[in-house]
Image (cartoon, rainbow over all chains, first blue to last red; front, side, top):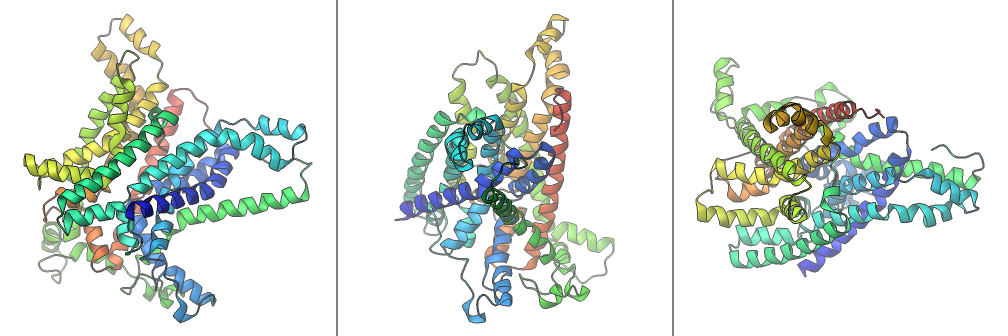
Length: 223
Length: 303
């Protein structure tokens, strides 16, 4: 079912964003401001770049004759016949959307991690905790508000994504938004489109309410 | 951030692995944006690096795709390049017309979104505002609600009200999408605003209007401008609403890109993409300068 696939893929993309975003948010938050402001540009530039530009870039990289496959062939990792299908399937949707949503994970994580004082971890270490224990028992719990804010935001945005899956998703990488657009523009089954849109809207509003309760809209930060 | 002297060898190793992971993630973030820039100078109609490009042979690079942006759709692209040629390009070239439309729509949508968003933020930041939270949630919702739902709703609404296929319809829709960004950025500057400055101005005999324009406005200006930039970028990058409510001849840059990607994909798209990346770098620079100015105005220490 398409709703199920949309939620599964969104959860996967959110998890990937968290895994990729956590280390760099931590690095940005612990470096001196002089350096972290410079590195922050690498997060903000994709954030500011047009969605279509980023999707096009991924098409140039991922397609069968694209940059990545050519590099793999040139390095001898895969043969000329074994080019990997990275686009027009779920892999394309997941890779491109993870890239596009990653800044939405990094920015809330970063703003929470900036406020965590390094003295807590130092205190834990001096009381005999190993660095792993100090991270897990002292640092990680303090980052949870940021993790929650980033993950919810990523998930909400991913569930309603249209452009990227339509361009790089092929048949298996389509999400619920693409079906709504299909019924609006091609099959002209407007009642079905409206019904699907209403269901999606209900799901998103529920998540939005949750976000407001847990994070508070006033705390949303942009760059 | 440096490792303490008592770090174990394992911790030192982990430190390097950690830095390597971060470098890879940064590469993942930035590489796709950088890679399209050389590709847009491809001399061949391919979406990938040709062997000649990899050898850095000047013949492998050309400006032909940038030229295509000017000539595509012209009535007589082969004419000698004089004033008549440029006039032809300005009138007929598909991408030039798309750019004109995008800028007109973006300009008016930004003005509308910025003025309405700033007013909303000012009202919402007053402590005596009733139902603050609920109103805020509703005003921010265009950012959260999937664009396809907004577009579907607008399509039905505009068909009933006669706004479909009009510039006014697109501008209103884009303004709605831009307002949340303005509210968020202006609210952020208002939080740090010292209310005693306003009271001081009022007690010295300034009228509320004078106080607003002479005291409040200059202080929240960085937030207003960055909100306006966000609103403009949102409009400049918006394709779904345009696809749903605009007439066939109302092309914008993103819509033209969308059609290009779906029909015949050529490096001309990458040339447009490169121009857009350069624009975003310029906007990001403006924002960074604004941020510094705002910090200076508030007497915060620079980083």
